[in-house]
Image (cartoon, rainbow, N blue to C red; front, side, top):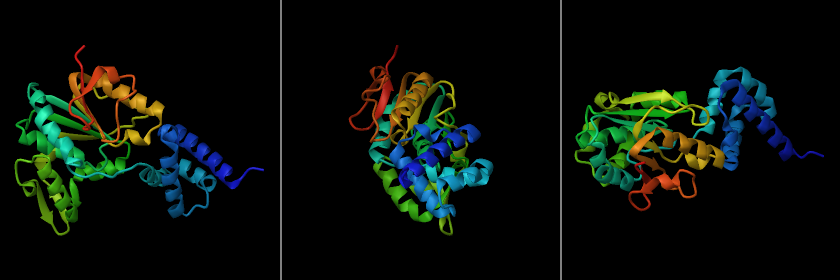
Length: 276
């Protein structure tokens, strides 16, 4: 006799197979525990009684699928999150980036854009204004639309300011935004150096040669095979001597590309690609 939990697993598997075939988003290589938790949470607010009931609606209605997509993807971010990482980038990475006439940076899994804007501020302060382009990508088109607006709740600015100061910020953080009612609008000039685009790490290709790749707190949600795919993608587009920045809970230890990299400072998870 098949149990209720076993039926749910079967329905969930069929749904993930269908999403991959219909929409091209393959979540079958995402870590099972966290993926299932987020999908069950979505189901509890969806109006459907089971994944089996939801399946035909999701596969036939892109609007319903987009709602599920927002439930699956994790969009938790902050400006200058982990300030010591940005301080290390400022002090130990930008001196090398300055040696290039033009710097290209890929920020994979940018969520609502806080980290991408943080990098833009940092690079401008380090004298690279007009000499860099940040390609900020994410799987969720709606969250990308929010990122492009550069508007954040004003209540978050206090924490963002604290992070900015601890990261070695050279100015007053309030110079970078305008307060309107209960929101803060980032200065339009910051957007000029950032290209926001949809990208799926489970199936899409690379963005050409980069001097730096950031993918922070994304790989922890992937199974081993998808982690390797993403890391090999970053490796193939990263120039020799370029930098790969992961989340503080992520590492290259035990990965096939690990011999090609060296962490530039302990616990930062900022790796430099060795010259061939």
